[in-house]
Length: 339
Image 1 (cartoon, one colour):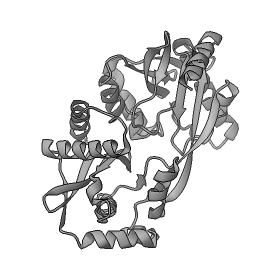
Image 2 (tube, one colour):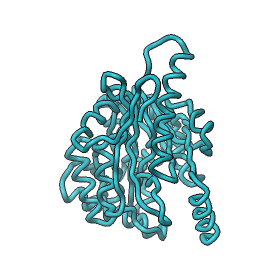
Image 3 (tube, one colour):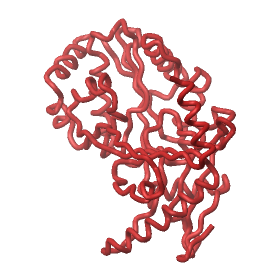
Image 4 (cartoon, helix red, strand yellow):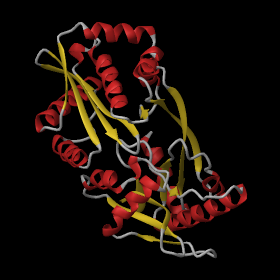
């Protein structure tokens, strides 16, 4: 598929995935979560979900935009499958180097049009969550997408003292309380560490009466893949010899993300979970990462915890569309039956 400016769009071969990841990191204004090295393992653990990357190319056959996404059949139609436990997935476009707003917008609108038309020929349901620095979603609104605003908390990782000073008084008290315990923090990539974290997260889901996001085998496979590619660190805090709380930090393009967490409810009043988060932030500062993203602030209970760290409330856009009358009717029926 092409347009008057000779921009073309096509599905990439798996051999081209490293080219896409290089584009995401260096030119696509993307995040870790847009990369094939993150998305492909996530989709592979679900046997009925496919994965593809579409690339937009200029007349020199260079990638200047595109989208990586999962797809599956649902209600008898092909739909986009959002990646589990991933905050941002969306089309990406290379920034154009010009001072003229009209040229930038015309260029971006043409590429978005290619992507939108491609998707409408391949899936009947699409859903995206753009990273916060993508502010212009008008091409999607003009094409019938519904939009909503989501929130996360972000902070610049410049100085650990500045971070601590922004904490609420109650959070500071909890950290100081935890520091008085007999504790140790382990950050390793061992199988023992992976298993210990999974057990802590499983306890959290049990307490919340929810199903785990992954089976033990799925999580172990993902953790090994992500650790091997330098995308994940697992931190666990112990009281004596007992694992108390664990946090998985995913590491992307100068940014660290609060990916998964879990803990033993028996120790929730010790301050050790707050101490662990504080020590992780200090470690990320020392490792030279520039930004931390708390991954979501859209429910009241989560906000109550995360807002204590004093980070910046950061909005981002979600857009979605059901294409075609048949697909709309099927989704409407499913919605009614689900009530």
